[in-house]
Amino acid sequence: MIHEKIQMLRKQRKLRDEDMAERLGISQSTYSRLGMGEIKLDVERLRKIAEVLEVPVEDLLNTEPVVFHVHDNKGGTNGWPARGTAFPRGVHAADDGRA
Image (tube, rainbow, N blue to C red):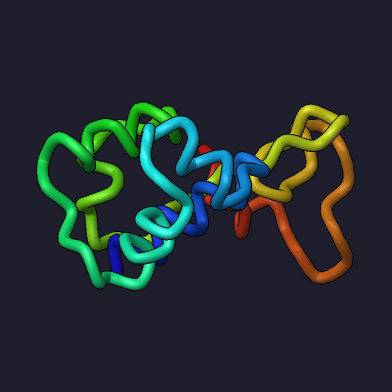
């Protein structure tokens, strides 16, 4: 699970495996072995990965799914229209979860 989370965060930041290996100060083959779970992550290496990905270590260890907030050009978040704009057909203001 942690390896998938690291891969997802790496891709989100548009980093290649080579970029991660370089920033971690390890060879690309060592990074690949880490990604496949062949090498165990110690606390220091986990801390460095979190630093490179700019997330707290807790985010890597958390088993909950990572949720990203999406902002559109209209000021809305999470795909919802900004206040005062029309909702998609079939969606009502009471459905949006905002107070």
